[in-house]
Length: 453
Ligand code: C2O
Ligand code: CU
Image (tube, rainbow, N blue to C red):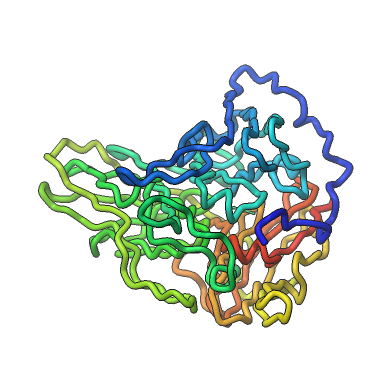
């Protein structure tokens, strides 16, 4: 069931694909990166090696670190024995560079494709395949994509970056493999229902690692949930930390919490510390029930050991950024998108959007504000992801979220309505939204639509 699932249910690639982005960049600042997907022995723990896939032979793939507004050319070569392509999750770039099979031909074994774009926003993004995702991500194809601010005032997107003592990126993942590192067979009814979860719990490709922080210092952690299905209800042994950013960059002001929920594909940026020397904190995912067969209590992903004190130069502004509301929270929706799980004689379960698999949704017009009610009529959670555009969450079951932010992933709790607003900027072409539980996505829980001028 895992072979190529996007067949025939969506619009074919638009004729406008041969655009200026196919031309090499002439900007002298252009950053050039080579990425290769290939079979990789992935050692998740001493003596536990998974026959996986890696970008440039590593899991996670190399962290791509760029500056807002500076062009990048990523020359991608497929050395796997199956087709693949790369989606730049969260980046607001032209449709032709979105890296899905709605916007390009999959890159066949031995072929090269060059992605060319200019990241417009500072923030924590990630990259992963958009072909046979259930297997390719599980085997290790994912990496961090970090964009730093250029300190230039942008179109309402200026931000004041906090000064911290150190920055770390933490990519959470889990793998379903045995103690010898043999991957469990893919597929089956439970995996289709729950999404694939595993008991090998990873940060940055290693099982339950030990991280360190110097006493007295404040670090900025960029956290990415690259799991196929698992929800990370992140906690640092109960200690308080401050949320400073979400999918689309900084929020307006730091928010102090003791936990934060990251559904699959979600990101959050937090400030951790200062702590006292000698403390050890567990990096946990707290119990989260999402109507799966497999129930999970609190589970550890790693530990944080507080080492000898070092001086701190951290300076955390009280205001980080201004995020203008796109519209009032009681705005009338102009579209309803309904996520549903229905029993099916042939497949056991169907994962549907507006009653169909791989739903073909209406086009949206550039410049026409979208207010969508994303309705989940099922009894399980689904992480809703919109490609290529940030949205603001106006309300979850009629209630405004705790703070305003830019998002590309939002959790749809069971039997809920999440109202979002987003602006189709002038980037016409084929776009999509879908559940980011990869097995649900594969089963067709997605919608395709065109952005038209
Ligand atoms: Cu992470 Cu279709 O996306
Ligand atoms: Cu789902």
